[in-house]
Length: 342
Image 1 (cartoon, rainbow, N blue to C red):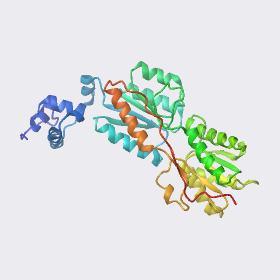
Image 2 (cartoon, helix red, strand yellow; image 1 turned 90 degrees about the vertical axis):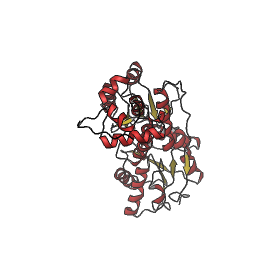
Image 3 (cartoon, rainbow, N blue to C red; image 1 turned 60 degrees about the horizontal axis):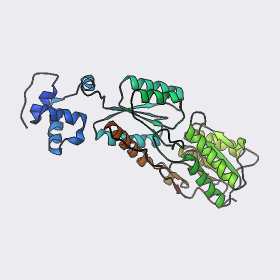
Image 4 (tube, rainbow, N blue to C red; image 1 turned 180 degrees about the horizontal axis):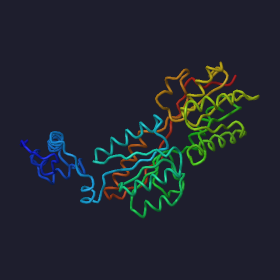
């Protein structure tokens, strides 16, 4: 590597090229698409950038390549290990292609999400990742008119109108309900996420009801408690259900945090789980197997969703004609929070 002495506080791409003993074109390729540069050149360039404290001028790069090298990601919440891990996988994959993640949280508000999408488009993101299908069609019209690739995650699109990477929430919830009926439960309740603007929560509730209907059972409206996803909300909902005159023997929770709250509150109230009531979760997040008792839940393909989403957007940004990703499987994980009813 050539030694370079420069008095400039703003080293240029040419400075990096001279220091790394490569051509400016190679440095440019590295900045725009690291995967096309050899490992030997990549290491030399990375070392030169570090020594020189070189920072590419984002606006100049955007003008030169017509790309910002930024991918927008809008998730419902950042106060959740589920989306945190999901973002980690996604960011790692796209960074290998020279992209940066720009993240926003909509707090389950479709209006807030719409404004965030508009802001990301105005700042020139190259692609966008969204969660769920509950939004106005005008959003897709905007993205298509600007030729911005997008991917919808955590759901499937039965109409095949939008590219999705996810699983069938209705079928997954029905599956765990069938399991509970199979071990003898007949009195059900559900702690659901807020249904307004959340197609995942809505489809999970409908999946539970459809499964019960197949067994000539029902889920009364008064035994469906809607709450924001969160442990404290699961605790509150469990107190309400246990204070009724007719206690359920099985509670299906629309997320693991809601189930965690229900289990924690059962200990405060002296309700035996699973002796008096069985509790199930959704997603199999990190605490589920370590709970007391360990939580029966549905293991969703979080890493697959993340990586397939990244691969889809990268392929689209390369101009490749790529088909929609396949529907992914969800695994029922049976643990000790469930048993036959008393």
